[in-house]
Image 1: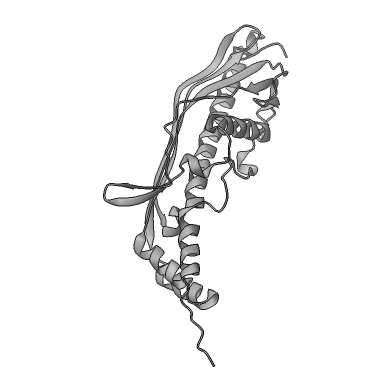
Image 2: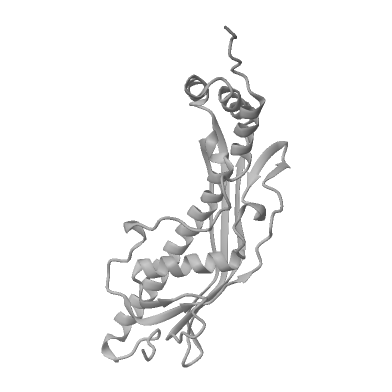
Amino acid sequence: MNTPSFFSPFLFACGFLALVFPSCAHRVGYKLGKQDSRIANPIPYSVKVLEFQDEAPVGEKILVAGGGHKWRTNAQEGYEEERLSQAVSRTIAEHLEHSNLFAKVYYPEDSDATASLELSGVVRDYNAMGKVNEKAEKIVILGSTFGWLPGALGSLGATSFSKTDVLTRVDLGDLKLTNTQENRVVWSKRSHVHRKNFRAHFMKADADEVYEAADDTLREAINEMIQEIADAYDADEAKAAGRGSISIAVTP
């Protein structure tokens, strides 16, 4: 009887590629839940999210070197064939619609839609980086070449405490909510930056995880923007209680 060979160059290559490249082209977005909803009654006006301008630096390669380490980034080559500004604007519209902040939300592609308000801005940065833990990843890749179950269990035990660094930064600038009938800005924010720098299991530097980390930071940025707009509206409404008008009010 021939002794089976557990080491397979093909499996080794598959393990390496699975870590380095996204499993499929990434689409900006995330699953919306209760934490992304506004419980209070919606602002009784419609809003259209315009496509944001794109000023974000674009990385060309997923695997890069810097500071004596290798990093995986959310480079352009891993995304679907959709402009970053288009993807971020679509995600903002989806999130706003789910949040129930406004009575009606129109998307950038709704070219014929006329809304009471328009939300515009600039995508200045959309970046995520995961430091490659080369030692731990080699253990996982080698483990995958020694049979699926024993290899997986062995590499899991050997790397269970292995950590790495993940950095993200999302910058949405020149945010403006404009009254379309009066061409009047009713809410604005010059710079809206969210960043994270945290230690996590080394697999958080996997290509798929890095792309999702950027989206998670976008999610937090949008939630904060929604809360700030809601607070501004509530404050204006309270101030206007005795005079019958509010600064964000428009004709529906």
